[in-house]
Image 1 (cartoon, rainbow, N blue to C red):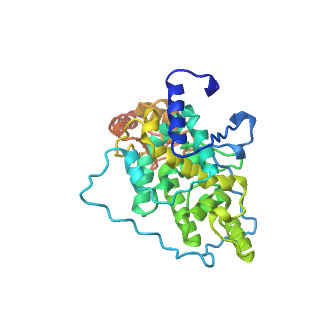
Image 2: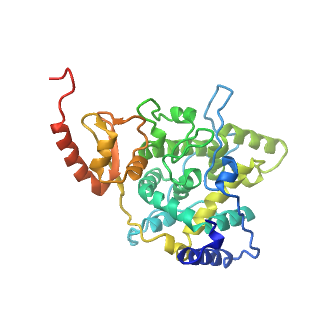
Image 3: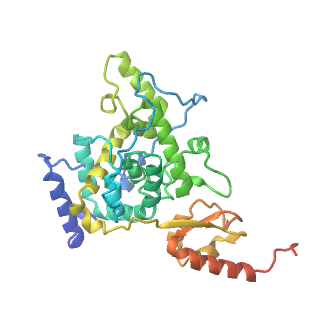
Length: 360
């Protein structure tokens, strides 16, 4: 159903968001209204990014690009001990924003596009609420900008089961060759691109390496989207022509030119809690997910039953498993409050299960 014909709470949210957008100094109402997903190719989708083509040279080498700034990650500003930690996770996220803001027509177009789709925003934020604490914890441990926690927003809509037409998979949209390079397990039992814990670690390793190459987070994000070699070649072309080598001055594909503006658009919306309040009730600043390892092979259908979760939610959290069983020693991912009941029901099931044939 087209949002333009809606009435009631969602239409009020649309109005509030758009008022907030254009009250901030944008004098022209530039609304980028893409056609529905089914009517356009995936590479033009405004909620996800499909891109990474394999490096056909057969030679991947991480190196620092000539004349880039030093590769060290910036040190965070020391926290003020007098300021209490935020109780709301989105406030914690906002406090960690540290990248320079981008203020361009592209940003305003993408911001208006998201603001005009509250149903889409609500679905993505509901998925983000499950994963954001863990992602932000990992980012803070690595002293990286909090804006990187928004990358899954534009990559996959925080959908661990997302698969692109180019076969990029998971929250962080890893291609298989990049996943293997960053030690993610891909076999007939597990695809760790769909595991929030493993894939987040790999994605942040990759982004740190890209920052090490380019010394600039915008170029690192462009490389995450387009590939580091392609960005390095674009830099070399600009350098040869005596032109600046910043993100905004490079000749980039449309998808990559949109990448940082999309991230900035989401950041801008999160920085306006008044407009987003109907879609963002307080989110406790505490873990949502945990995991435990199963002591024996466990059928997925039984694990789902023990969890007390609906099948779609359980499968979304455990999308890394490729088969009908969770193999012995692997971890099942659950909301923290479900762990105790799950463990008790699982052990009761395993005690009652007859021994496998040939086992005494």
